[in-house]
Structures are given as C-alpha cells and as structure tokens.
Amino acid sequence: MLIYQTHSPNEAYEAFGELYARYSQRVFNFLSKKTKNQTESEDLLQKVFMKIHESKHLYNEKFKFEQWLFVIARTQALDYFRSSKRYQERLKKYEPESNYDEADTSVLADLSADQHELLEMKFIDDLSYQEISKIVNKSEVSLRKSVSRLLARLNKGEAL
Amino acid sequence: MSNIPSSLNEKILANVHGKLHPKLHFLIGKVFLIHLVTAVVTLAVCPQFGFKAFKLPINLMHSFMVFGLPICNFLCGLFFTATSMLVASFVLGRDEMRALKYHKTLAGAVLLLSSIGFFSIMNPNLFVEFSLLWLLGAVIGIVFTVEVSARLLTRNPV
Image (cartoon, rainbow over all chains, first blue to last red; front, side, top):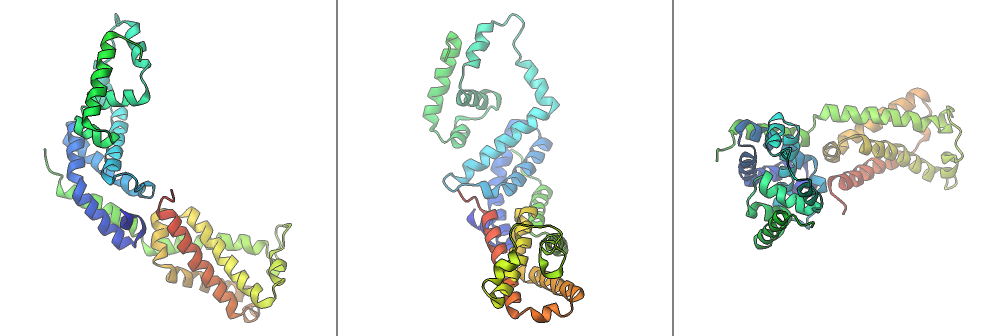
C-alpha cells in the first residue's frame, strides 16, 4: 500500500494491480451476495476500486487494508442501494403495518448508532458474522452475543 | 459465485493507469497556465517592471535587497517559481502532482524558458542583469516545492 501511495506512477500502478488481483474476486463475491445481480455487482466493483484509488492517501496503516477495503465496499453498496428503485421497493416490504405498536419503534430509536449498524449489517445487508467481524474488527463470538442480546431485548420491548 | 468479466478487469486497470499517468502535454499545459496566472499576479506587485498594480504594505524586492544583489536575485527566482508550484499543488489533483514530480525537469524547463522569454520581451537588458543565481533560485523553487507538495499530497500525514 505504501508503494501505491508514494512511489512513481509505474510502481504505484503495479502495486494497484497486485492489490486488485488479490482482492477483486472477494469484493465481487461480497457485492454479488448483497445485490444478487451481476450487472449491479460489476458497476459497484468498478466504483469500489475507483474509490480506493481516489482515497488512497486517506488509508491509515494502523488498520488492515482488507478491513478498509470492505468498509468502502459496504459503503458504496449502501449508497448505491439507497439511490436505486429496487432498494426502495425492498424497503417498503419492511415498513411497519398500520397497527404496529408505537412502543416497538421507540425501542429501535433508542439503539445506539453501533447497534443499529450491527443489526443492519446482519439483517438488511445479510452479511455473515465472519464478514461483519472483518469490518468492525470484533470477534465473531462477541458479535453473536451482541446480536442475540439485542434481539432478546427487542423482543421484550425494553428500552436499550 | 461468478467470476469478474475480463473486460471489466481491463477497464478498471486502464482507468487507474490513466489517472496515474495523465497525458504529459495536458499536464505541462496546465502547469504553464497556472504559472502564467501566478506570474502575472507576482509581477503585478513587483516594482521591477513598473506595473505596481497593487500597493502592498510589504515591498518584497526591497526586503530581498537588504541582503545584497546576488541574494536578492536568488530569492527572487526562488519566490517566482515556488509560488507557481505552490498554486499548482492546490489546483492539480494528487495523481497529477505525483506525475509532475517525475516530470519536473520538463515542467521546470518550460516554466523557466517561458519566463526568460517573457522577461527578454519586456526588458531585453533585464535578464543580462539577472545572474545565474536567479536561475539557481528558480530551479530550487521548482524542485523543492514540487517534491514537498507531492510528498504531502500522496500520503495521509496522520
């Protein structure tokens, strides 16, 4: 990554090629799983790697490259979904029905941003615990515990 | 899971290659235009050509002259090109600055020859009065500013 950030254009291109060869298929599989559509996954793959290129100066070596790459992939996918019609239609399916208890939505509103994010990744983005653990840098065991604890509280309707 | 089409791989790699290797004539053209604008502003406040379009509280030429003519020439050259390159580092993209770092000899030659040509037209005797120290200052101004800007722009300082 350092070569890609600071060396000559030729060396940087070679380094990018290496990163692309190493991670593109995994990113593509991740995107295909989210979109379930070949064309959308291809568009997103292009956006993700162009975003990586444009943001390369922001990469911090304290974090793993893979982790940074998947955060970008996920953000790009979410941005894309939010602007697409297909996603709006999917969201409508999850809209609360008219007799839905207001107390239930207030419980959701009390969730912290991290808790929201975790539930969203698990149940809307349909990511596995392994994938989430790479993104948020927490163990799979602790994620499983957090999700089950959140679900139990949501079922009880407790404020969190 | 399906594989990525090879045409898409090629397209992504070609896009990044294009960004890392901007067309040289466009890049030098941009640098020349930036230098042209910056030089006009610099010269507009310099009393050397008698333009004095703006009255500034600090007279840079007189400040440089305190150190004597040779140092004044050196500092003048340094300031003249360093300001252009500094403006360029704000206007150009990160990849363009990186490319410029590896083509600074060509960019510097274009900047210096165009500047000397302009000075000769404005005042044919002026450049004879300028010393090699002006040229040295101008070269250092280009090399130093491009190196520092490209290093700062290509990596997150945090």
